[in-house]
Length: 179
View 1 (cartoon, rainbow, N blue to C red):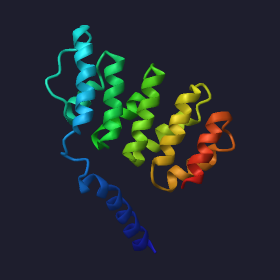
View 2: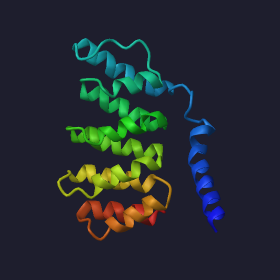
View 3: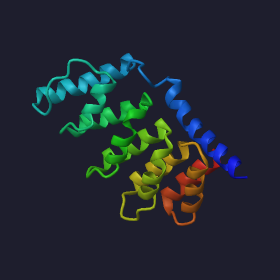
């Protein structure tokens, strides 16, 4: 029995690593349309003196732009990192769930759902169940949890469903019905 549990644990750990090793999101260039969108926002912010000019948009640049002083630049960087499923962005995006700007928090939650990394489930669950959080942010957290694979995410949605109200309740219900 003990060796079965050990083997099951090792198998689960390996399965969590496979998406990161499989490589669709490792080393691939940022799609051209996303590079153009990011460059327009960066050029505008640089013209206003909010950030230094950006020479190129790649995955590393996007990670650096998460800390830009311009919220518009940060929003587009967060959105783009989610769109390209950049796994290196998971920890910085989790940190952005505590940002003072609710739009940044909402887009970070959405991006984490797109990346589909189980490390984000508990921070998103905290956001989902925080009654002091804005409804739009809680809805984004519910949607993100619903996009993340695994039993942990399902259990959190099921546990949160009876306590949720209004739009949050509806989003959780939609996410549960799509599983």
